[in-house]
Image (cartoon, rainbow, N blue to C red; front, side, top):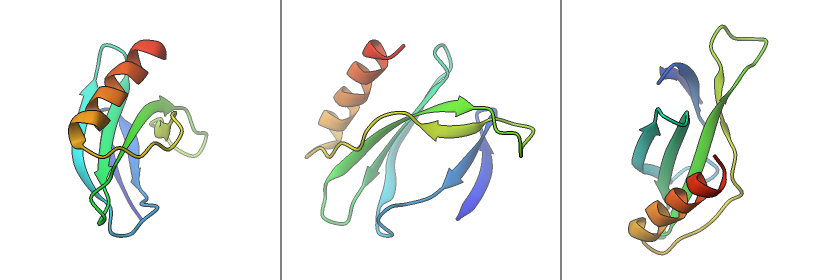
Length: 90
């Protein structure tokens, strides 16, 4: 597990599947969301939306996952999922 400051909040790198890697990352400053898409070793894509949440242990907020796990067949479908998720949950 590694931690780093990313866009004004703490990012904790935790992977459910040790072989998953970040394939896409986008910070939406206007709505304070961080969109990350992981690619699994089997080729599937996992899109996640994160929001900053305050944590009493840290000076900075922590990026916290806000959506349920979704598995997409292509990176384009994962990006579309995140775009629609942001519209519905802003």
